Image (cartoon, rainbow, N blue to C red; front, side, top):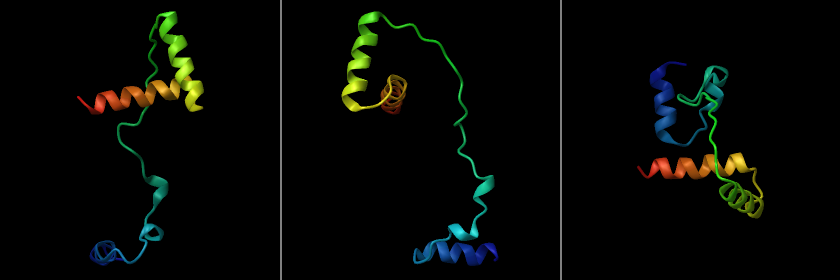
Length: 74
């Protein structure tokens, strides 16, 4: 299929174009991980754990989401 034809299918919005894509080579840019160590006071860890337990998520996931929300507000 030519790019023009794929563009027309996409622009029409009537057809799912994913069968025409090679998703095995797709990636999300800037999603590589880098490990960092952060020291928190014990009271803060307890509060994080309470919130994580209440929400049913691991502490690390909670921290990631909260940091992402805060960074997106900058």
